Amino acid sequence: MLCFLPPVCVCAQPSRLIVDDDQYEQQVIDGGRKLLREGKLISLESLRSQVRTHGIGLRTVPISSRKLDPPALCDRLRESTLAVATLYKCPDCGGWHLNSSAGFVFAEGGIICTCCHVVLAADQGVKEAYLLAADSSGRVFPVRAVVAADTESDTCLLRIEAPPLPPLPLRTGALPGERVFCLSHPGGYYFMFTQGMVSRLNRRRNELLSEPGQKGGELTRPVLFLNITAEFAPGSSGAPVVDEAGNVLGQVASIADAGEPDARDETSAPSPSVPVRFCTAAEEILRLTAPWTRENPRVPKPKPNGKPKPEIRKVRQNAPMTLSVPPRNF
Image 1: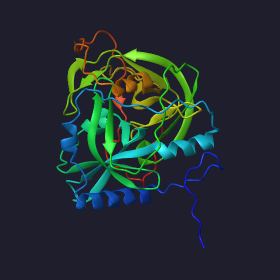
Image 2: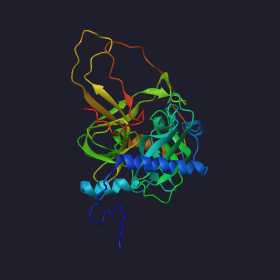
Image 3: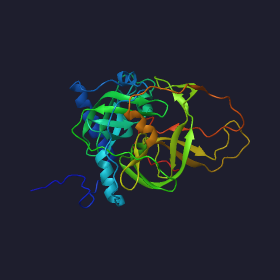
Image 4: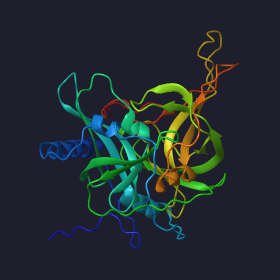
């Protein structure tokens, strides 16, 4: 007789999740198609229309003070970290594919947190697409609504239809040098656990996303970010970045390559580049827990002056990942 233990138990020995990316992705696709046949999926177009900057009254769970060793922490994060993915009908082959990002359980009642650009980003040529969420066991949940959003910090809260899932606490006041961990899905390699540190705190203005997901040539208010050394890549958008006790300090947002020459300078030889990783700070995410609307005026984007800064790229996976090809070297 076989006995199946729960996949995650902080009090017991950490479990071993062995990920088969192809099998997991197919399981999520099959689960999404079943939900579609049952009429439970909301079109991505409809969800995009709900992304408007406003907060909502919510209560987060208390901060945790109990530090965990990395294997137990990874198990804890797997309870609350989801794949947030677009299920779309391919205009070329007519089959159904998955475009995955990440998110985490934010509050009770099926409230999860991810990036606005996960919802707003549009793939040209795709006519039919839906947003769904899946846990580490491959259970698939429909995204029912956008309940709060801050397009300036690229953060939003979604409501999914799911059984009770444990939320992660949020903690403000991260410090440079603090140890951090991230569980995400870089490039469609699901539930990758990495560690590093907070390398600096950074306040910056980014180009403002318009509702259809296009940049409108205006800048956001100054938004607080964490630069971290824990690795992530396209496909990691929305993933939680936590401390040793599993408190969320930030959320994966974007990445830049520092050290690349100016693309307009054809005389400079290529130089080594360093990925600079940006995570939206918990201070910004917590703005979503109280009703509010945009207070700061939009600022016109300044004209280029001197050498441009590295381009900041969102880290949503922008194309279906073929898992049979070797990974790119960084």
